Image 1: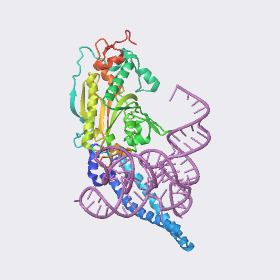
Image 2: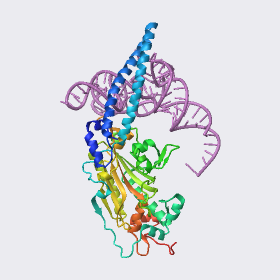
Image 3: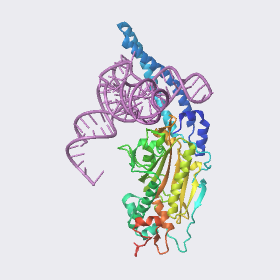
Image 4: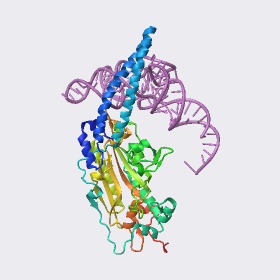
Length: 430
RNA sequence: GGAGAGGUGGCAGAGUGGCCGAAUGCGGCGGCUUGCUAAGCCGUUGACGGGGUUUUCUCCCUGUCCGGGGGUUCGAAUCCCCCCCUCUCCGCCA
């Protein structure tokens, strides 16, 4: 959410920002400013009336004379009616203002590349060489089935399309990579938190998923709760409504969650395999830092590097792209995606997404800190994937596959795989 | 799911219809005292919105906020209704 005062003083910046993000806001800014002007003038009138009422109340209490008392009471009745009406209009205006504010996007940082879609994201760097296989390479579905470790048919039978089963060695591989990533982040000083994955609307609105993202979430209407699409939602919301001390910052949280996405509107897109699924597991890193653009930019680089280190340890080629304006979410100031090489796609596929928000989420969450100077400010929030599965399994299985259908296990995962260095295919397929 | 108790400022805790944004204590901040520390003493100390003032720091006026929402009343932290949360007991249960 933007600061109303910022919108008031910089309406053009807000409009330009939305345009750079290719987010259609129509006349929302001008409408908001009109509502705001009306609200402020009405507020002044209402406050005068209220102040008068308070004074009159005291006079009535003090009035000994019955006649005087009756007269004052009659006057009060009229003032009260007028006050009630004004307050009703104020409440309406406030609701509309908040609604408009919730829908205004955060302008992107100046260095964010221009562009309409992910096709115009700009590559920042590459690491590793995509493997060249001297044999017909399989995709992760074929490899996984060959290992007896992936069952899409029964997954769909149980829960519909975009659902899957991981079995035996692949289920273990998932555990191994999750645990490896988790331990590594704990060693870096991130605080591991076990969090709810079913959260209230305050958390969904606070992190910016609602309003707007309702169609992507599984929401339990009876309880007013939603299954999260990422641990970012509960992790970022932990301190909602609080005033932290600057000394406590930065807060660095680590969380693992099941993530649920309806993938509405993605029908027919990437239907094969484990790339786009309704339920997956993800380890997420979240940082709350002081309200300083330079500092939050430094943390942005740091959480990006954390993810890259994991991929290098897993010997997976990847590239980093700076996400262009049109591919940014409403709240994001800037975002880098990490894309890992996926041989079956003959391309890099998104496995990580590192975002920084400035105070966009913090303002919605009412998440503040008291600075060393005594002033209260909103924190800056950031987050990035550490590892997400099964997407990471696509890269692991496909990049480390061998001609005989076996799959090499990168060194950091071997201990958790009982010391094995290779996953062997089943003797007989099927 | 049933019964009961409770939700007040950073924390503890008083306040049961009127000058209460809220006693008191702790904590925080500033100062005094002290060789240093501790202790002591004095003062100060909520958030948010609007208006005015100011080059910045600031200061003044005003409103809202005692879990959330609604109601009664001239006036609500205080009375009534609904909801949420916490605790205790019972039931159920991974």
